Image 1 (cartoon, rainbow, N blue to C red):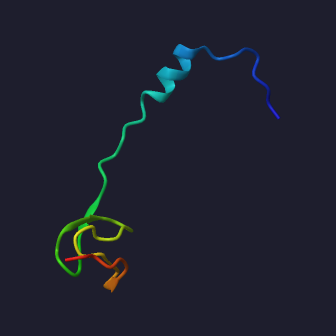
Image 2 (tube, rainbow, N blue to C red):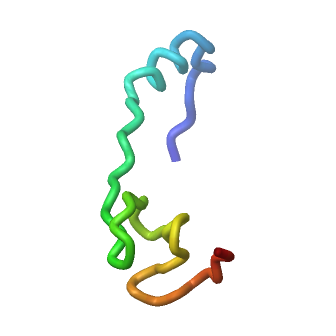
Image 3 (spheres, rainbow, N blue to C red):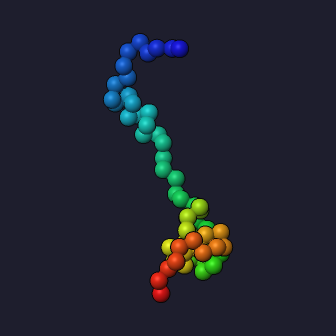
Length: 59
């Protein structure tokens, strides 16, 4: 395996990491109530996930 000849400085490391940009999360509408929900998450309004009740919400 390759070995580094010298340690990379903090500034060089941070310059490399600074080019990565955060992406805006993708939303979908809930199949039950139509509220915007993140993919693969339970709806915070009605508690449904993939058309089935996942969390019992109190009225």
